[in-house]
Amino acid sequence: MLSSVYDGLKERVRFRLKGPDRSHDPTDGRLRSSADDRSAAVPFRYGMTDISVSTPIGAICHIFYEDLAPEFRSTLENIPFATDVIITTDTEAKRRFIESVFRSWNKGRVEIRIVSNQGRDIAPKLIGVRDIYGQYEIVLLLHSKKSLYGSSGNKWRQTLFQSLVGSPDTVRSIIDIFQRHPDVGMVICQHFEPIRRFTGWNRNYEGARGLARRMGIDLTLDHILDFPSGSMFWARSASLAPLLDLKLNIDDFAPEDSQINETIAHAVERLFLFVCERAGYCWVKVADPRFFRIKKAIMNIESREDLDHFLKANTVNLSNSPTDIP
View 1 (spheres, rainbow, N blue to C red):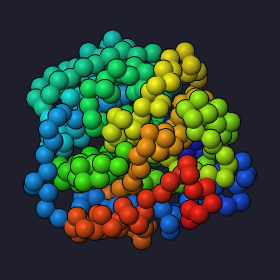
View 2: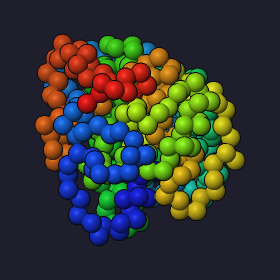
View 3: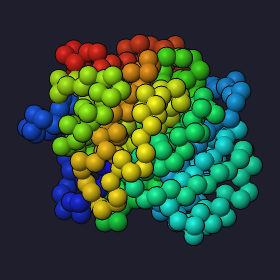
């Protein structure tokens, strides 16, 4: 979603890799500083050969740009467990091509659905496959983020893919978080550095507030704002229940018209972590250090005790602690 903001600059601006711009409009919300926004470095540095799953993982992928299907296939091969792949796209021609790429997938079933090109990746993943979530305890949400104005979107996609599914041990690390800490509902990637300064409400606050109210979330500008920028992450399906239970439909989302802001899709992206907390879960950030220039807030995890300590020290509640978060 945010790629359109970044793309719109058409790479005319050289971003300074720093914390949020505190001079922005106060209606943009309160953002966390990069120094205090800590993430766990993946893969973890302890042995994880004992990690297994008892039920398949659900990999939910929106592939609008079908030429990226081979990249999705090779990335998902890094999941060392049984995995069903559920794909949405918007035309029959794309469906046929994607099907050919995944024809030999042998870790589980593959299902491809055609969904209207509305709501970017958000509507297809939440509405086009809403019935899927109840079949899986753990899901992975990906989409074909791509820039048409240079390499920015590609670098962002690669950072997200590598931090979330970059190797079998990266996946094992994330699964170990879920298994060791049943209160964790989402594992998200640290913000791609060039877009951190754009991770405010960006005129989406009022739309998000109305949507949040329908889920019993009392949103204010005093709340710290954080979210999985790029809208790719791992989740317990149960952590998405408040949003899925709204039963939004495709017509709630505006037809695609190259919008860069102020749509329901942009609002939903900024509410994912509030939704997770509303469902009774907490969340955690991870990052593959190879894809980040500033590494001071990326913490190495040497043991399961380190993991436990990291989560205890860095759990943030956006919903209930608007005044005491760095």
